[in-house]
Length: 292
Image (cartoon, rainbow, N blue to C red; front, side, top):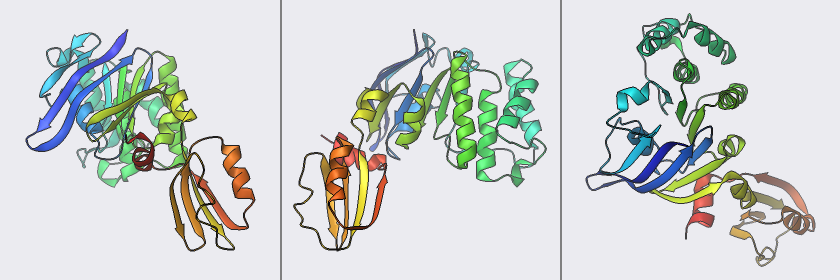
């Protein structure tokens, strides 16, 4: 069963670009990744799914029901965390969460306490006294407190320190084991790779790839930056899999996709003073891999 079904979804903003002809499904019990550079159309798609804004054309079904006609009924079973959270500053965290839980007509107090302990959230603080990261924790607790069947997360980890991020990922995995379906939107590829089964990649308002995460990992790039003790011939890295090759004095940088052992053997033959190997930004992958 598909929890989310999106067909030919388009949202125009006059002459400005929105999203165009979006198609993908999210299966029940799946953690589905939705990735793309900032400004690609992720938030617009999510807001349209939630009927916070209406589409220009196309259709969305959630739990098999029309997302607009059945919006009030559907939203009872959805937990949503927007990319930016805004609250009543003078309220205490516990009062805000109690107020938001009241909309679901169920006792969420036990679950709020559990989630707050996991996320290391002080329920007695005023919203105005919280950092951006702690406000994000409030949003996470708020989105999960009513134990929704579908959780939609838009850039959920921004502002969270690495330890809390890991606790959050563990929490999502536990929710998923209970049967919760999760749509996880991010511009950080490594986050999506840790959690998701499949991924839709959006760029400039269009889906450019729908892929299993295992396949995406196989084709993933690594970003290399080398500092050599002597100058290197510019043709030295003229090999398959190397793209975006740049020489700046004795510093060489490039992206590589392929057998990692082959490129490391090539690098090992150089006299190095330093080396960096990291995951490239999604923007770099789009520029040099997905752009066709």
